[in-house]
Amino acid sequence: MEKSELQKEKILKVAQGMFSEQGFEATTTREISREVGISDGSLYYYFPKGKREILDTIVREGLESRTVVIDDWFSEVNSVADFEKQIISLYERICLIFDDEDSYRSFMITIRERPLLSDSQSDWLLEVLSNIRIKLAQELETVIDQLNIEMSDFGNITGIIISLIQKSLYDELIIKNNKIISNKVKQETESEMRLLMKLIAK
Image 1 (spheres, rainbow, N blue to C red):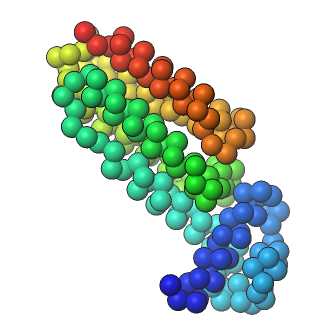
Image 2 (image 1 turned 135 degrees about the vertical axis):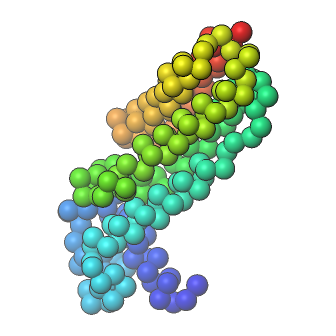
């Protein structure tokens, strides 16, 4: 990586920490520059639009990294047991995102600074979860003969699965202000998913 790219990454890393801890509005470009060890002019060399461009870059890179982790999680489903393993694997992948400090900070910035973000930036989680619901419904269809529910119920079932995931994330990260999803919450959420599968299986 070139020296200029390294400096740019350093600015982003420092700003990410500051935005996460004290908020975007309370952080000044001067504070970022001082912490990085550069002049204010140098900061604007790397980010001509200043603090807002830094925020947009942090959010964009965070969205990209989180989406990559979630995207490739499907495996072949031939039974309800396979489907159960798949949704638990998906949940564990999502939890792992927040084990990484940068991913956690980027997520928190995206949530806390939502009013400042574009619709596409602030709605990333809703979009990802919507795509997951579609994929889950398609997988349920492949094992419909093993289920005691109708295809018309798939929307409700996938909605419940997504709600279980969302609840654990928001309870831990937003309400309790924890930096990771605790093992206790993971176990409780996975237990609820297993119960749901028992209820819909023949």
